[in-house]
Image (cartoon, rainbow, N blue to C red; front, top):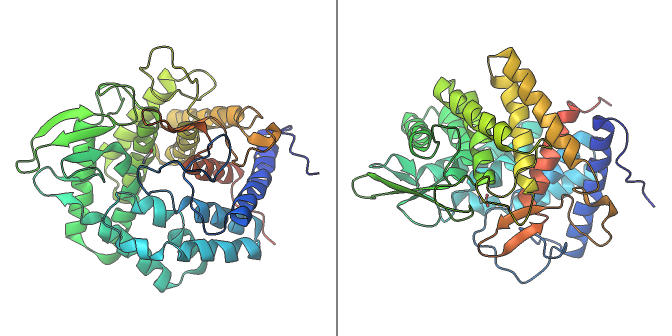
Length: 374
Ligand code: GLY
């Protein structure tokens, strides 16, 4: 029986968690081949609950690419290729605003390892497809729910659009993605660094009408995961563009997160919800950890760099315990417990969620640095 005791230094616990993660992913794909779940129900991946939208099909392959690279494991590489190929046609999917989630975690990782331009072509096509969501009047990329809707979540998908625009020298696409980031910054990032989940616009005139939410507590409240998409996404937008307005937005959202979250680094689903029934939304914490590890490398202020790096370690110190990593929860099929997808619809509440698994593995991979040679 494997020893999953989460003891030792943070790095040793991260190594243990990544070994445990491989066991859990192997269990999922062995029990349910070619199946793409979003969240567990009672800790089980296979259940009859709906998905609301299909945006998670890259995270399983993405975890496999992380394992393949870190452990130099040919079996994980073959599985990663298989699960990447399963989503290949999604590069043309115009029904979701999530092609960054799908292709940045899979085909981009594959391309970075192999350097084959054919792999890069899928990534660029996915980025261009995302650009087709642009509303000229409102200067935003529309969400999957309606033409008048712009989600904060889309910020986590702008990296692939910047990438496609810059690789192909496509100025029109570059203008679209830049404008989307500026529109999001203006209407969805508030003065105190909190974020709104959704902006509603007049489709014809582009007039901004109001803030709204689907997964947060209230239209004027602060849904934690949405803010972490902004924190990470604005950092990525800065990385590609060098536009300091985006770095400023990333820092303000990160500062709000640090300011408003309990000392252990794990927020509830919404910071404004009075006495939250569930104390934790662990996927937001995992995204924040990975986003802050990136931001620590981008910020120009050495004190901020140290602060974001230290805070990311605080989050991971909390997550790398049996309360969160399911090492002591018999029969639990996920890696990270206490995530939430959609509380209002009752979907994936206090469960393992596929993006939580992916960004947790990504944060641990970043924490551990480059894999040892040989
Ligand atoms: N992008 C959907 C979510 O964060 O739940």
